[in-house]
Image (cartoon, rainbow, N blue to C red; front, top):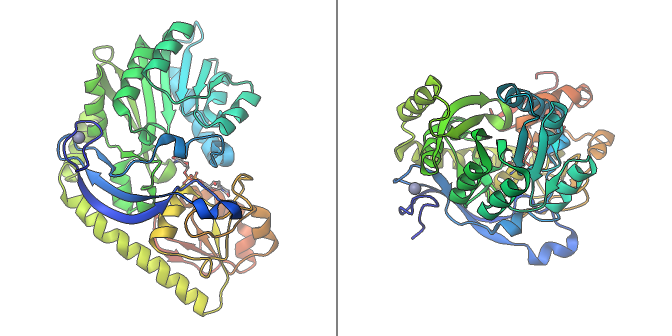
Length: 410
Ligand code: DWN
Ligand code: ZN
């Protein structure tokens, strides 16, 4: 019987997507034979309320020297991280230069902004290839998984941190007790642990089930973060909702007693309870809706194929792996997916094996319909693809709403 990652209570699965590939493993033709699969199912813990995956994939299968996601691919995200860095530095004493450790620092997109804001920075990133990009930018980066031993070592080497930060990383970690304990030990007495992740109530409100895949091990809301913080002598003291990635939450944690909690914390937890997120009902309802959304997308694509339309995916996101493989979308329905990431281009998408092509291929030969897998970057993408619409192209989106638009409608 699967047990909770945090409190060891028997967890209650509420969605089972079946066999799934690794969402960020884009394959060369010779790699197809040994593709790795696991069972993607999501559960709720009736003990501590944490929503989590049932089967876990070993971190080394996901984060390694061939990791496919480079955080610097979106202009909008770079602006977002500039804002995150500025907001954090405004809270820290300016002199001496604050010391900030970023967990899962990827290619250094946020470290760069923190450094320009005057901080001393250190990244911890287990995927060597993306860490190498940060190092080329002169950003001190440890290629490692963050654990208690590393936290102690870093504290001994660099001194206590003024802030430990993470963006879209804490939800990727199954060893949560180790991570929270490590963060607390690395922090100085007035330090803050600030992280943001997709916010569970937003995932549910939008039926954004494509956020479920093996990298996202847990799905946080304020109450579950507050509980985890308490286990490690920390307290959830502030919350800031963020629009990115379809609705995220930034959590600020401080050593217990160091800061007083903003009223927003209690208000947000109360709102989560009003939504019934501490009960089984909303999760069961989400389980019903995901099948309908996947079916609708598949039927729309089948109709387009029957009309002889060419459909190309836009953005070979990790998220799209869940949608593509759950809805059983095939190269017969989606001829290829364009993406600006060189590490994904020329490879095949996980599971369905749809070709990933450079963005230039999209521009050179527009499809009739572009299926927006990178729906969280919609504003940025629509703004730069006016040419596609001018040429008569139509966008198909399934989130935040299902739409197939004639040209010039967005
Ligand atoms: O949490 C995670 C998030 C932050 O990043 C990870 N588990 C993995 C990854 O998830 P994702 O792949 O779903 O993230 P994005 O940011 O939605 O991926 C966007 C993809 O689309 C990238 O491959 C880059 C590409 N892209 C593009 O081709 N043209 C993006 C933009 C903005 C564009 O204009
Ligand atoms: Zn639990």
